[in-house]
Length: 262
Image 1: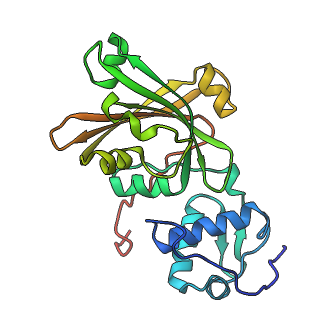
Image 2 (image 1 turned 30 degrees about the vertical axis):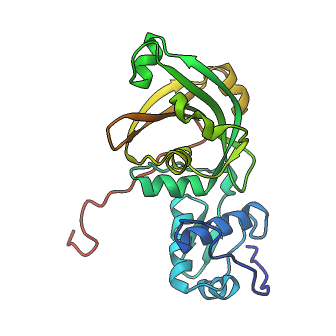
C-alpha cells in the first residue's frame, strides 16, 4: 500500500473558510489535496500528529476533519493499518440537509454562484402557486449555476426570484460568494427573519440539463426556499435543482446512547 512521503509544513489559512469552523476548513483543504493527488487514492494519510504539524492545527481539529471525510466516504481507517484514501472528493460529492441559517451560510462559503442570465417575469397561475404570490405579480428572475469553490464542475442550477424593488442588487454581478438575501439586507436595510424550505422531486428541463452537463428529463432534487422579512413579506424565492446520481442527503441516528447496554 502506498504511503504519503513526509514533507515540510504547508501554508494553511485558518480564516479561508469564512464562517466555517477550523476543522471544516481543514477538511476542505484535505479534500483539495486528495483531489490534486497530494494524497492519491489508495495511499495512506499521514498520522494525526503529522497532519497537525503539517497544517499547524491541533490534533483535535485534525480528528474532527478526518471524521468529516470518513462520513463522506472519502477515507477509511483501520487499527494497525492507518487512514486510507478511498475516493476523490469530486467523484463523491454529498449534499447535507440544511436546516438552519448558519448551515446555509456554511454551505454558501464552500460554493460560488455564476449568474447566467436575468429577466423580468409576470407570474401566471402556475408561477403564482410556486412563488406563493398573486397572479400578475412582477418578479426579477436570475438563472444561476452553482459550483464548489475548489471545482468548476456544476453542482446545481438555481433560479432566484426577487421582488423588482430589490433586483438592483444583482445588477452587473457575474459571480457571487455571498447569499443574495444578505445583499438585499445590506442595501435596503431589511432583515430576513425566516426561511421556509420545501424539498420535492423534479426533472431537469433542457436549459438546466445543458448547464449541468446532464440529460434532459433527468431526475433531480428540487429545494425551494422562501425568504421572509420581519413583516412576514416574501422578499426572495430560490429554486435549486440538484441532479440525481451526484448528491446524497446523508443522516445518522443513534438508537441508543453509546454507553447503553445492548
